[in-house]
Picture 1 (cartoon, helix red, strand yellow):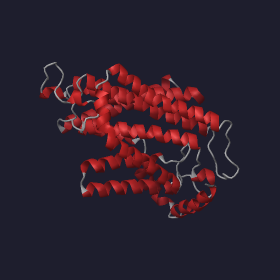
Picture 2: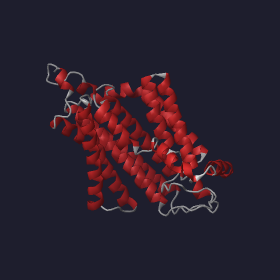
Picture 3: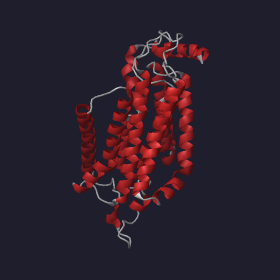
Picture 4: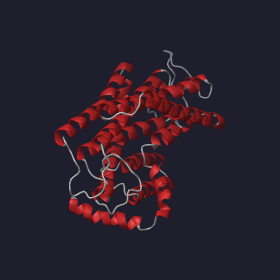
Length: 347
């Protein structure tokens, strides 16, 4: 790959030669493909716009994040600013480079939205966002072109699988009891992290940056990459378990007056900030395995709050209703939403 990266460094240098005045805009564009979209924008959809679509977006994006972090931890690919000193690190990620998580996240989220809405204008806007996110990551010195292409390929495969199999998987998922659902969510989230840790120890034990990398590599990049993977996996577990529990309790509707929708988002986001602040005080940052466990636990709690705690609070505060208000089945379950489960493409 060194010969390819040598060529791609020129692309990064050319984009950065456009000047630093566009850096703030590039960072803002990059946010639209970052994994921070989950607690900021996906929660907005889930809490305030459409619970079913928001749930599907969360599971797809979090699952894609787990796959991406597994690949990055195993491949140990550099960032441009690590590989060559001429590439300026306008952002400073502490994890390995390829495939690009921004490419994966932007394509699965905005691609899913485009395919669901099926409108030409939406297709064009979503495609523009995906491309713009990729260009922003090149300009910021965070990725090579090959990182973006690899990310788009991973995302396309995951997006195809989601659209092809999501309904069949949901049918099987709804047949399981809540304990089985929680157990499967735990296994699906924890096993990739354990696999990444095992492969890292097997393939990259005692790893040091190669001599060919003339840039500055942050210290502890192996541990940071594994901890990041654990955090994303924890969020997936908490979110999926929380969505399953919410469905068992009757689900909830994101419909309602604008004031209620806005209040739900403010309360939900405030809860996320409180959890993060409390975690920083109660459980300080750590390195190694302890750091990975901490990240998994904290983000599992965030996922559970977003998927279960916040919606239940909204219902109790009168800011949201159960779909059960539309009617009950003969066995007392709400008609429609609970049987649809956490990823129903409706309210």
